[in-house]
Image (cartoon, rainbow, N blue to C red; front, top):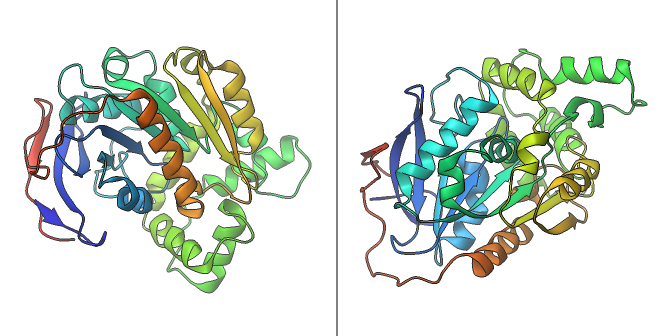
Length: 317
C-alpha cells in the first residue's frame, strides 16, 4: 500500500503480464470490494492522465489505471492493436475476480484498444459497459483537422509527417504549450490544464510516439466496433481537432448498443483533463446503471492480484 500525489489516495501497484511477456504497469485505487472501473489512456499519455477521475471516483469505486506499452512505467514492446488488446486482457485478468465485470473507459488510443479487444473472450467476460471517449475506429489521419487545410492528399501527408515525427519535443516551454493547446485542446482550455497535458505528453519517448502514430494512421477497427455488444456511451469534444465529432457519430451509428452520444461543448481532444467532471459523471452513470452494488469492506486495496499479475509494493510517488 502506498500514497501518491493524488491528495493521499491509497493505491497499490502490480505488473500484469501480457501474452508476449510484456509487463504492464498497473495501479489500483479505492476499496478492495468496490465496483471496478478500468480506465485506458491514449497515445503519448500515461496513468496520470486520469488523475482527476481517480480523485473523483476512487472514494466510491475501485479505479484501475495502467500504462500502455512504451508509455509511463510500462517498457516499450512490439506495437500493434492486437498487442493493445492483449495488454487490456492481461490487466482485466490480473485485477478482477473470475466473472467479475467492470466499466471500461478508453480515451483516444485507449478507445481503440477497447475496439481491438471487443471480440476477445476475456474482455467479454469482464466488461459490463464501455465509454469510448475522444476516439475513432478508422480514417484517423484523413479526418484530423490539426492543419487548417482542405481535406485531401496534401493534408494527409503533412498531418502524418507531423504526428509521426521522431523529432524531440524538448522541455515544456510557453511555445510548446501553445502548440499543444492548438493541436489537442480547446482554445479556452485553462492554463493549468494545458500545462498538465504538456507535462504528460512531453514525457512520452519520441520513438514510442512515432511508432504508435504509424500504427494509428492505418488502422481500421470497424469490425471491432460492430462486435462491441455491451452498453456503450460515445463522447467527444466539440473542438476536437485530432478525432473530430465525425468519428463519434460514426461509432454511434455502428455500435450494436449505443446508449448515448455526448457532445462535450467547448472541449478539445483531451477531455478527461479539460472536462474532468463531465467525464467522471459519464463513467459514474455507466457504473450506476450496469454494475451491481456490492458490500464494501473497511480495508483498502492490498497487494493481492490475479494469476496473471505480479504484485509490487511501491513507495510514495
